[in-house]
Amino acid sequence: MTQYTAKWQSPLGEITLVSDGTALTGLWFTDRHDAADAETKELPIFRETVRWLECYFGGKEPDFTPKVALRGTAFQELIWEMLTEIPYGRTTTYGALAAAAAKRLGAARMSAQAVGGAVGRNPVSLIVPCHRVIGAHGSLTGYAGGTERKRLLLELEKG
Image (tube, rainbow, N blue to C red):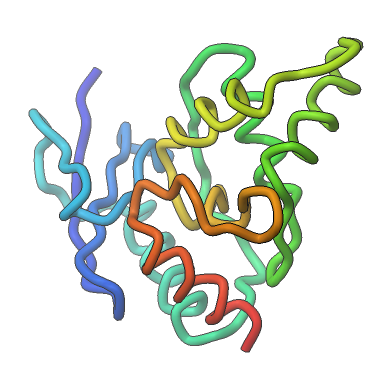
């Protein structure tokens, strides 16, 4: 599968965008992870994603979502879908996410560590808001972009 990439400079550092040509398949802070074997190309999905990022980093909740194609295991995709349901400006814990996932799957319980593993493999950060998941008692744990960025993103969303 051909992948395309673009870069965008955010207030918190350069962001890499990756697409299959029609949907966004990756978005992360470049200093934490970079796309290999991807052709740099101007695409409508990148323009739409940059518009979303400009709105978001401008301190406003975007009223649209770029087309995203998430590819993972069924469990990862469930957790990533649940991340998109966390409201702007709000947080949840890994434990609460695990309890909600267990309920959806009809399981008695779910490991918060398993949920954390899926959250950590989220390929489209910010738009799929993994930064809104915090540890027990409000600790800022487990963000691929770094805990300082996580803190700043949560502050941005609170206004």
